[in-house]
Amino acid sequence: LAVMRRGLLLPWRVQSRWVHRQPSALASARLFGVAASHSTGTRGTVFYQGESVPTSIVSTGRVGTYRDGLGSDGTFFGVDPQPVEVQVSNGRGLQLSLDEQGFRLVDHSWSHIDYYDEQAILSHYYPECESLVCQETGASWALAFDHNIRSRRRKAAGEALKGGNAVQEPLLSYGVHNDYTATSAPMRIRQFAQPPKHNDTIRQLYGSTPPISPERTETLLKGRWQFINVWRNIASEPVQRLPLGLCDASSTDVNDLVVFEIRYSDRVGENYFARHSTRHRWFYFPEATRNEAVLLKCWDSRGKGFMDLMPGQEEQSDINFKVPATFSLHSAFEETASPAEAPDRESIEVRVVAFFEE
Image (tube, rainbow, N blue to C red; front, side):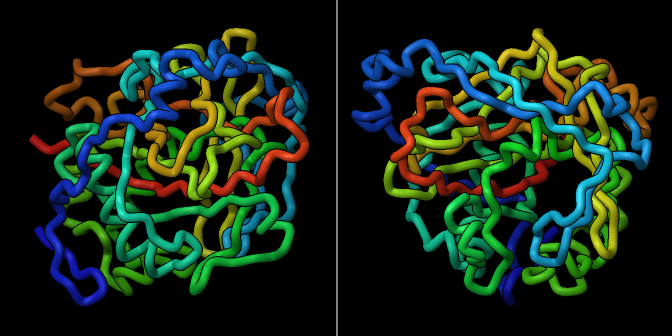
């Protein structure tokens, strides 16, 4: 099976161009606790939804936002973000995994591009992320389909990517969230069997051609599939402000969740927001560099906490195969000890869907 991408015939099964490299001296120093201020962790502020916001795993229609054609949110409704200070553990050197916690850090040096050029991202970084996800998860093939560039300073200045959407800020007051729900995750895959819509980034790559063959969609949904975000620092210096916080999936309960609708002009997506729980265990990777990538799981069809809610489970041959982590709640956080003069964080996350075929 192949697709046309910018006039080139490319196979779905991505050939890996990713090469593992030894950690840099700076990264090695961190692994052995040389950076004493980050050796065990830090404290920081995240935003949870208040008690007035109803918890749910399916949409109530009472909580959401309207998102414009440039990817920015307008009016929010039904939300009540409340700041909460949490302990955030240093994840460097720990045995963290996508199946258990829902995230991990990988060393990933490659030929960097101008990350503020939309076509460079689509033409070069999307295939790189597809390869990386296949390499790290064992997936048969992967499809990169969306991305965001984040910088508080550039967002405030009203900047946009060359030929692309507006720069967004790191999501802090937006709240602790996950990018999909039990409803929106399979719905998003079915949308890939339709011509890309106006707000779909991959419309630039596929035009009116569905990224996934409609004839294969229901079969793919019965197998294992994952949504993985590939997050990386794109600045020359390590991240020192608003790092990415990651919540251990095993510390999250369905009763913590709030469905948040994202209303586009041509479709409705859903995120999970969350209320605070003292069970939640937070991690981060201090001073992340541009030669590292965080793989963040945003949905796994074999996640045991939600598998029974997914359609077609009774027809699956591997129904008894389940993993602990369906997704990891996440958020930028304001580190208590971060100096006021620390440079602005600049990062990219690319959304990838990965399929595991027998």
